[in-house]
Length: 407
Image 1 (cartoon, one colour):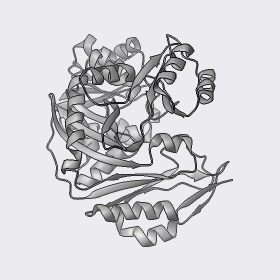
Image 2 (spheres, rainbow, N blue to C red):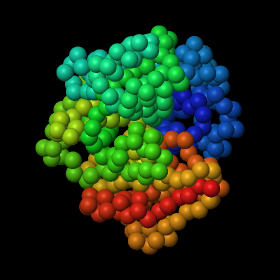
Image 3 (cartoon, rainbow, N blue to C red):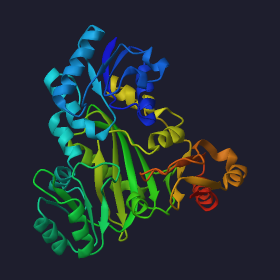
């Protein structure tokens, strides 16, 4: 049996899908390190655990190391794999792996993925196309970058995730407002990037022992940044059935080169990239974790293969078999309009009647529910079909038909 510690600060639904996949693997004795009590976990999952250890702050490497050592003691042996899916955890996980000689991503590799300024420095030094960027530790440095780059620019924390505190700044006045609300400092610098006009995509990958053995390309409509800045916008993600054509040759080459120079060895990654209006590409950022926002489910449905289990097998056993892709797949994210709580949901019956055979998964909002704070919205509908055009038309119909209103 392999002793595995899964760091789960909080028992979020999205995280528990990965935990269940790891707990269900043969040959795995699983422990959880959490900031919550075991009662926060489903009872059937607790029964499968070899240990549960509480940690005051799982992002603190000192506290995490003590918790991992305790988990090893409770399981009766050395910890052979230390895993977690949350992006803010990756540097702490790497530090503990190095201290306890656990195989996996090390500190330098984790820093390359976590610190977006260092990441872009590494990409640019290796001639990987990416957005022009600058790190501002003072307001003066921020103003100087914007003057040189020109507006619009994108402002974000260097170690941000999920578009949090990420803003498109159109004018010097926008910049000054951002600097007042989030003033940069040497301890908390600000990352500024050129704003790229074009279509945003993802390049989600699996790597084993330094070989990049799988990728999935998706297309966003519109971009998450536009969604965050316009609450009324509905959005969707499409995974075409076939992305083997020459139109994707450049991102396959650039994507794999980016993973090489950032130091990706084993695991799943989520890369965001743009196709500019002139046809060139630019990589925005790469995360050394499986994709969120239902992307792992989308990839699973498109390939008829459980990629939650794939991630667990890759992370723990470095085992992977590349699947065929028999389907196109897409998600429409349902976002409420107005202010207050959800008061009305229109168009569900019509969408179900028209698209019922295409729907493979859905999470529908409830009347009385508070609106979400992220770009994922209040719910989603996932469609699947062998023909990409059918899925794309279905997603457009959902966005035109379903309306969620707040009052």
